[in-house]
Length: 175
Image (tube, rainbow, N blue to C red; front, side, top):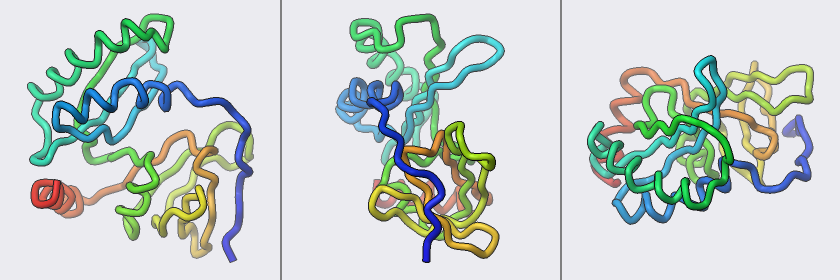
């Protein structure tokens, strides 16, 4: 029996979801996949990070091209309404996982999640089991757990170098 940890919050579309809606068609037209949209705060202000990849990976020049293509859309639509830094990069070793298809794709990989504020324990590490009925399924400390995807603030894979290379090869072969 799965343990349901957190109920679905009744909230409007989040800022990252709105940004995905705005920029994903452009990213796809350029031939890339928008893996993740992250809205992060830091010591140097707010950061909007878009993680993108192509059939053969992604270069710094390609990231710059994506940045140039989506910047006018973000300026025109102004979903943020304040100052921020736009960063476009590859998903990297700490590959963010946000979409249901990616939770399915990476079954069996080590995953870390951080839940939205609320429960006493917000951080979990374990093995990704899958995605079912809007919930992320994980094996944590020998127990199968179920997390409402809407309650997850951040999720990312914990990859070994071999796994990272295998994902890169997979992307090149099947992109």
